Image 1 (tube, rainbow, N blue to C red):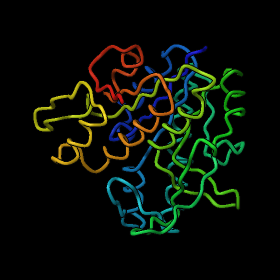
Image 2: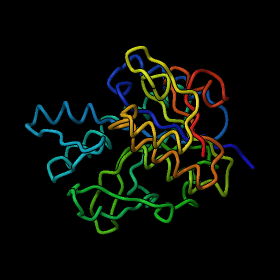
Image 3: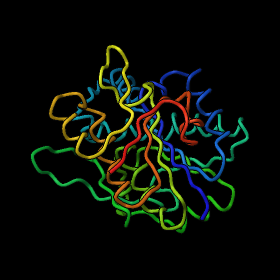
Image 4: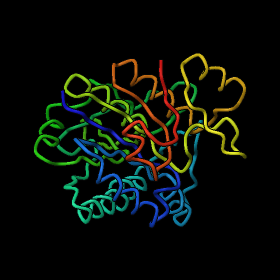
Length: 262
């Protein structure tokens, strides 16, 4: 079975041109088939402020009204995605930039209103992934680069958490490939002491619940780890959280990072 590495890049790296350029170069040197999933929330928030659109976040998830949907479509699907693809081409990586609407690779359902109305936010499962189309891309020598947008099949786009997209893609492709999932950002892993940058080596489901209760893990890290555990339950090889500068080492099981396990 072939190896497939799915890497999600987010956090402050997207905002830092030299750091992002170095990451993309390192990503291009990762062996085997691979998929890149990226966020872009800070850039979207900055552009939103210029346009008078205030970001609204609940536990790390963005509430997406109509104005925000237009904003993230321009930023995620346009500016950020195409800059990443262009840089990967310069690094010799034949990348193809995608939203979920492109080639119908990833559809979604608008999140139902419960205690919070998330607006035009999309929820996805493995059933929403066109695995056969992605396999065609991968086996045809292309590296898919996903932004955080899906579609509802009715002509509408939906803002979908990039961590979730990465984990769902991993789960959907695990029957065809030996899949590893790596979450990269500006920290060396999940931290037990943010001030002293102390990295937690391993987290299982029990310790994760305790880390939430005592306030060690909060906000944006919660959906990331929720998705990591969902992916592991589907049978993927491993989930690692680590620093963007060590992306190749992390894919090889080396470097400093947090291993997520059941």
